[in-house]
Each structure stands twice: as C-alpha cells, then as structure tokens.
Length: 484
Image 1: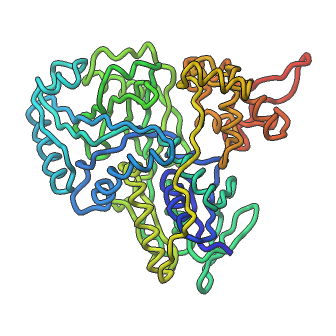
Image 2 (image 1 turned 60 degrees about the vertical axis):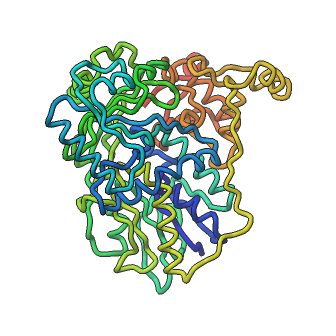
Image 3 (image 1 turned 45 degrees about the vertical axis):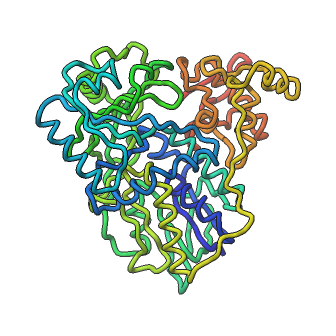
C-alpha cells in the first residue's frame, strides 16, 4: 500500500514527488515512458516566465507569480543551471505598444516586480542585434532560462534519494475506487494507494475519467523549433518575445543555458497526442516570423529541429483541485505554459491539498534537499582535471567530441539514482549527442557503455521507448546500426 501515487514524471509530477518526499510517506512516481521527462517536458522553450502574461485571478497568474522566485534556491539545491536573463516583449507598431501596456498592467495586478516599458533606443541598448523596426518593448528582469529536462531529472533523483519509488514503463490502464484508497492497474502489475495525484500531461483527462465524471478535455498543440549551434545564443541577451496571440506567446528567440540559440515555437492544434513530427511548412513559418525580430539569424548553423506538444485544457486555465467524485484524487492537469515556471508552487499547493484530505502530516527530519553535484569535466580547472583522471581514468576519455563529454560523466549518469537506461536518457543528463553531429560519432560508444554498465546485450539498448531499437544484428562480423 502506497500513501501517495503520482502519475506522470514530467516537470509537474517530479516536482510533486519531490515535495512529497519531504514527508514520511510511502510515495510512488508512475510513468508510462522509460524515463523522466519523455513527454512535454523534454520539448519546450525552457523559459521561466516573469508572470505578466496570464489573466489576473487565474491559476496561471497565481502559480507563475509564486513559482518564479522559487527557482534560485531550488536550482542551487539541485545543482541545475538557471540564468535570470530577463525578457522582452517587442512591439513593431502602435497597436503592439497597446498590447505591451496591457501586459504591463496585468503584471502589476499579478504582483510581478521589476517591469519597465522601453522605447526603441532602450531596446537597442539591451538587444543591439534586433531589427530597427522595433518601436518599444516590455522588459521584465525576473524572467530566466533553464534546461527543463535537467530540472525534472534532478527533482526525480532527489525524490528517489529521499525515498520515492520510481516506476517507469508502467502505463496506467485503469483505476478502481475503493473505500479510502484506489487500485491502480498497469499491464505489468497493480498496486494500492491512499491518494493519487494526476500529473499525466496530455493524458490527464483520460486518467481523470477513470475515477470521476469527465469535466475537462485536453487538446494537444504542437510547436516546432530550430536549435542552432553553440555560441549562436550570444545573438540575444534576453528572452525575446513578439506580442502574444490568442493561443500562444508566439515565436521567441532565446539562448539556451548551454549557449545554443533556440527559435520557436509555432502553434498547431492536433488530434494525435503523440505526433511530434516536424514539417517544412511550419518550420518555414517559424523562420519567417523570427526574421521579423532579427533578420540576421544564422539559420545555416541549425543543428536540429524538433517539435513538442502542449496539453491545452478546454477550461482555459490550470486544473489543480481534488476531484469532487473521488476524494483523495488530485488533478494537476492542463498545465501548459507557464507550467514550468509554476511547477514548484503547484507542487507545494498539491501537497497542502493532500494534507487537508489526510488530516495533516508532519515533515520528516531527515529530508535532504541537496542533490549530489555532478562532475562537469570541461568546467574544471587543469589541476582538478589531472587529479580526477588520476583517480578515475574514465574521465580522461572523451566520448562526445562536440560537447566534450567524458566516459566518466556518462558512467556517473547511469549509476546515479534515477539513472539513464537509454541513449536519449544519457543525452538528456550529460549531453552526448546534443552537438553538431547529433550523436553520429558518440552514439555507438554511448551504447557500448550503457550495455556494459547495465549488463545488457548491446542490441537491447534503445533510443527511448521499448520499440525504438537501434541495432538489429551483425553483418560481416560487425553490428548493424539502424535508427528509428
């Protein structure tokens, strides 16, 4: 019997699981995929929004405003890179400036600090590479950038270190209500839990409908992006938004925390909750729209395009509440943007809801909020590198030349709590395959290390999910590599 079961290991689920690990509860984090952050969390802009955009009085406004200031300590504790770069919402004409002023007013109502309306000269002082057609902007200094999957992995790891069980490859297929508890069924097994927190993202409505009357529907909206080579991120100093539309904050330009330039997304409503294909027409739209912001974007340095899906609720707002039909079942659903920015505050609120249902529970004294730091070899001093290689020669072997990732870092990523078990799992944790060759050089070596560390046959190592095989057999004494 679990005290609490969290369904979904994206940024919301991992945040809730880590918050629950502060208490003496038997908690499970259940994920249908093979790893943390394999859904929406792995494919978004990585922006920590200041909080001026959401309509005052909504959950989006409330939790964004509460969540934003929590990131400094959270990321310090979890050894996650976070940069407060600030953001601009740029205007091209007087109509856009009306929108800018409206966003400023919203920000004031939402309690957002450090906002300023800028004229064209002030914009140029902050962002000299933007087009001269820009007439003004809203500047918010508290906005920032983060690697969303790095944060989710760190949250899951810290939760596991504090006692949370991680159950991957467990797709919830049914939930049965009992008196005072629930039976959760997956194809592999079933287990009982007193409380459930539904953080299932694109499938949150389906999970809700297993125990309660349908009252919201999730629609996937696909957004497509360009990722440019390292150091292109220096083109902009802040997160640069155009004025938002009805369904999206629009095409943005931002540096990633690793120095790449990220451009996108568009917004396209789909029926398929798994369709993350990129398309030529929508990428063309992203490119042309971004060029209105800056006409000298070096698209010739593009190393990757990708798409992500946002879980858009028909309620128009985050759904964070206990079910009226199923006491002890908490929905944390419809968490689209600014969900990442709101995650730590949402997690705290969800735990308060559970406390109300359970009749309160005290924090445990031995909770450790600090995640063990990961070695980032190329950031060490020369003397530190020498000492580390003398202690462990694996750190002296470069596996990924594009990102300068060593074998020692890959081994550590596999051996840590919530460690990597797939090629993409290693990629998300320590970045081999994130550079120019996109894994063409280092992929086979990473697979060899995974197979050795996990005690598996190399042909059983997959890219992401069970069916995403890479090797099919041998020919002329060599492995056949087949990407899928």
